[in-house]
Length: 411
Image (cartoon, rainbow, N blue to C red; front, side):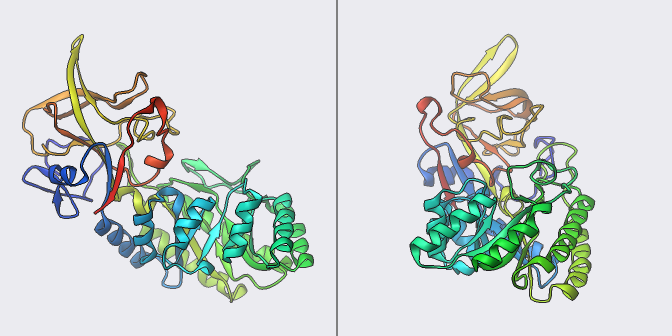
């Protein structure tokens, strides 16, 4: 990237031509004309494909890679991912509908979440989607739905392990959690599954997300595989699917270092070889969302006003936290940090200025950039927020203050 780019993380996902950011072989200003209005999200299918190719090369050949749809459930993105991954992991009946509209076979789709409604369970059973059991009550509800449908359910047990994914942005295992069944309770659940005669598939062990530390991920993966081997003796049938979660993070902020996936892949290959001796029929699965799609997307919003207030320059744009809560710093950040941002149609601007980029909402929380030095911009220019392919639009309060919707495109 040129010397006037934001001094953030190294960003090489998208090309720059004639001073403009390029997605899908199209300059940003032309892409904005094609979309028809701002704000919008744009996801680059070539970037998605390249990320998967790089991951396949780094991971063991017999590892199954699933896409966690909650990261980005846009139907066109999911359709494209169906051609790249080995399965989908979803978290709602609406995501299941999108998944089943793709060529992905239902036998490679699983459904997790601590609060599945009876109707959602019924839909998954009818579709032959594997249900990751999160509690003893949910197990009994599944049985009732099976009786009503006259069908058997494919089930796996989601385990809340005693260990956690160290240095993880969000910890989803270890200690008291709403996710899964505590590992010490799993033997009793497995006995109950055996009595009920459900179609047992295996385990789901997801301990955390957004992790850039290879050592932490490697340790969690090894512990997950060891835990599955320990619990195998209680299983009603051989383990066929062993989902050891994901947790692979992407860099967002200064000081973030990209995850060393080759190191993770080498360690996982060794661990899987040992596990294979005990669990010969098990497909080992990792599920990734943010890592697969996060860097392949940008959020684009247009400058609609420029003003000076007591010596500070404010660029007011037509989008904000209602479309991109994470970039505003209100989605899990304890101390707000700027996402990497560019003036997408002035990538080679020589004149620089320090600006605040704010949205149109009547709240001081609507900030996309705080005191960032960027190429000098004017009304009509396009602001591009990088690292926006995951947990962007659908993770945001889109109805807040009744502002217009954003659009999404896959290019």
